[in-house]
Image 1 (cartoon, rainbow, N blue to C red):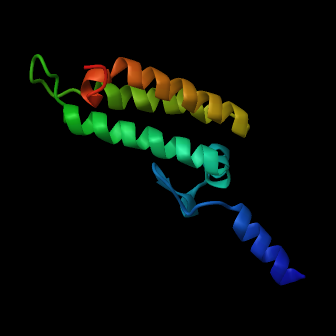
Image 2 (image 1 turned 180 degrees about the horizontal axis):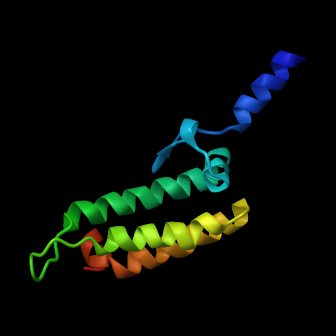
Length: 116
């Protein structure tokens, strides 16, 4: 019985890695929820892929002036701290990711090579 309970708990914990962080080091409620729900983990993976694509394209440099700038990175941090991380349940996190992914795809279409 104890072994079955332990296996159930381990299975419930979900994937060991979400794209943006190591689930073994998850410490916030939001991070734990992302790791526990495969759909949230997939959304986190997608958000991370978008982030990496945009950062790879812009390389932290303003395309017009050449000045060091990371507007997407700053905006992503702001979103994470003021939108995603204030969620208290999986449904809220899912809505936050869906809205953010849609907005990022729209706002950064040229950096992502979309809509050309």
